[in-house]
Amino acid sequence: MSEKRFLMGNEILALAARAAGATGMYGYPITPGSEILLWWAKEAGSEKGKKDGMVFVQAEDEIGASFMLLGAVLSGQKAFTATAGPGNVLMQDAFSMCEAMRLPVVAYINQRGGPSTSTVIYSQSEVNLTAFGGNGNGYRIVYAPSNLQELYDYGIKAFNTAWKYRFPTFLLGDGYQAKMMGEVDIYDPHERGVALVPTEKYLLEEKRDRPIDQVVPTPEVHIRNQDGVEYSCYRNCLNLEEETLQVNMEIKHAWDKVAHEIEEHETYGDPHAEILVVAFGIVGAAAKQAIDQAGGKARLFRPITLRPFPAKALRAASKGAKRIIVAESAIGQLSRLVKEELYGVTDAPMVEYHRPSIGISAEEITRLITELPEV
Amino acid sequence: MSHPSAAQLAFPKCVRVESKPHLFCPGCGHPEVLKAFGFAVDELGIQKRLAFGVDIGCSLLAFDFFNIDTIETHHGRTVPVMVGVKRGNPHAISVAYVGDGGAYAIGMGSLLNAAIRNENVFVIVVNNAVYAMTGGQEAPTTLPGTKTITTPYGADNHYVKGPDLIRHLNPTAWVARGITTRQLELRAYMKEALAFVKENRGFAFLEVLSPCTLNWGTIDKPNETFEILEHKMAKVYTLGRF
Image 1 (spheres, rainbow over the protein chains, first blue to last red):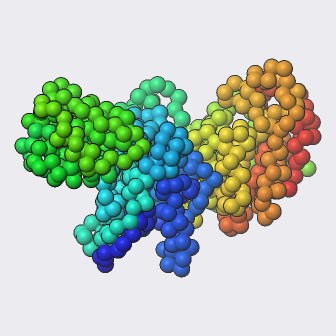
Image 2: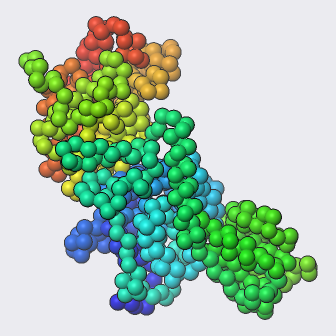
Image 3: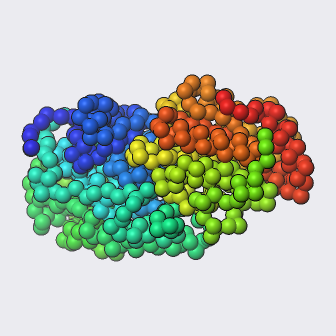
């Protein structure tokens, strides 16, 4: 049943995971995301939670939490973690392994100040880490919500995407959104016609709908048979360069096939406006207000998936733009992605507004739109 | 202790015959540990319920030893992975197979906390007092004065006694230390520990003293191998239930 509730961002995320059918949460306390843990601790220990088989583990550290999550996913549980900043750094170890084996882990990241411990408050400087962390090639899905309702919507969607496509999937929020309170529509996804993608056991599965080696890169899985029983062995350590080449190319191939289905973006404002603003997350929300304030001079392109990046849509949006403004609470993490996709496509000059680990208001973006000299 | 019969020394049923000869060095203790484990699995009839996690290092080479659902994890991360498997699937019998470096150095935080939380997993630590796969560096279990490639002047006086530590942290856990040269005792330990976790009675921990002939420099000196294992190591690392 759908209901309007006044909630904090982290509570919304906790509810989103529950609504998505998650039964396991493996975490370690870290500001600004800890309320997600608190909610799950309470819910998992309640009568209803126990009946539903909910599991909550407060691990010894983020390394432990992320590898427990990986184990839980191997066992077929719909499970997730939530972290931020230095915790996100530690979890890359497990996320890398998930990338190699195409394990559908879900992590809610609320970016805090960086580098290192820094502040517990806010930044947009975990884009590189979340999208490309680890010693792989960044085959992960990263959603960047821009308001509280999207925390809920994409908090649910992250699980479906992870299990449908079998890539590690992240919801990249930030400390402002995590701690902000507001009204949101909390609903049961089934009532909106959103079917929940079922999980599958990697280990101890008795009957599979499709062979597991169609999902996991071939050199990473060995199937053995004895007395009519199938045993699976998942490999994380390979012997040869040729094997690792094959793993990486199989992951890339799988990614290339589906990336266009996953990409999402939002455009806002007069499509003929000559200034194109690119921003994501909560800065994207501020940019939307700035578009209104600037009275038709600019339009917004907001990537909702930072990975895969909506490249085709951005290139289309760049047509007719005489200036491109990229605004982000980091130094060049978003603008690097934008430049990569626009290389050779547009001659429009790019203004990079980089405010690492501090919020960007609508007024600041409005000034960028209205006060820069005419192109 | 009586000598095992020829039949008892044959392969367990859950062994993956196609993968033999195994991948370990001549004289390595791992196959002995694994054999004892395999017989215990057979005796308890739990092959289909087992999830077997292997660490990075020589323990990794156990990945194709059995017809058992297996996951090669990441160095030091086998315990939390197998905790996750058990938490996610309470029906699973979850086993972590790790070396002394994976357990007591890089993975120590996770190991101790799994014991403190009394997780329903069985952790087997193969203690050969050295980092073997990477070529013979000092381990947390290397005994005082021992020369390794990272202790060219001899190891210092500190080393870790895993079972003592686990017992101290968890009074109800199943804890023991065995040795590869006492195969029937090892098999009995394996069976007890597996039954313990099968019944969800909490944390089970078995350390096994095991030779590394390659890095001990005794690959062609069996007498010396046994001397180090049974006298030097077993003297410091007490055998039995804890």
